[in-house]
Image (cartoon, rainbow, N blue to C red; front, side):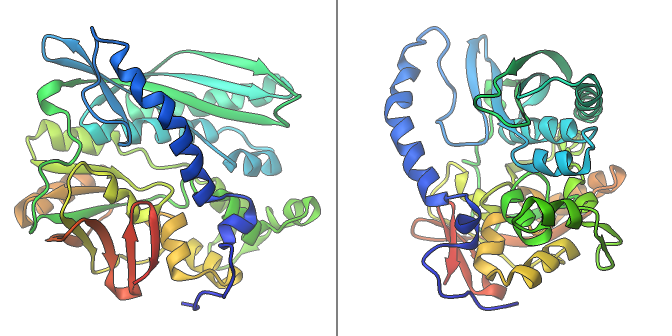
Length: 366
């Protein structure tokens, strides 16, 4: 894989997404938001803000889990392809995959569509995808909102908010992780719904003319067009993970691998541990193509993309690894034993094969 090019800005930042800017913006937001948790004394939060979802204590040992997420610039690919029937799956996936990380069973979701136009065919296709995502995630779509705001949005933006149920004594934020535990990676279906701004710039080009042409370009390495590859729906992990929990498998943590890549493991509420990703699972061809064409460094690839692993579960030992793998096989989800937990002063992710280290949400050369 190519060495990083000397540049003050990462390729992702050059594409228009600033990870450092997002961190600063979040800090400014949280300064005011964090104190609000004391405003609802009757229904306190059961976890700290910062994990994939949070849980409201509604009494009698029961909790409502909730979270929100959107499809991001994957919608741009749908617009270029004039195909909107799968992005609803992505919207559901990004929400329910976050919710199960706290051990909750997803229950229902509402959607928000911000748009500069209304088109019956396009909205019907969006609804078709939402329904299929709901079927896969075993949830209902209980409502939503369409907001025509052409002064703000050019096209369509799709966002969801999801709730689930979990007993308070089963809320899981990774506090039970111990050195010696093993990391099982569940295969992604493709790029999913993160890093599309960089993936689009590299695979489709920067100008509207290039994008319209390249989105339909057949790529031998992928066995389909570039647009079809980028539009592949995000895998929904609800059924296998719920089956693991129902079977009584002791999952020390569940982690959705989204923007930030394997550094999402650092979001667990546990310190003095190191996630060692070794051996690396096979890298899907789409990521090799993005890296080759864009000359993107290993560090940036593993920070921006899932690199073939869409979800991780942390388990105690090989017996649990086998049980997880058998359940995933029943659901046609490939698994890889991708590492282990070591003691550490602080918290970090290391990828020895690429000589990378992740602290917080940042992955850099070690």
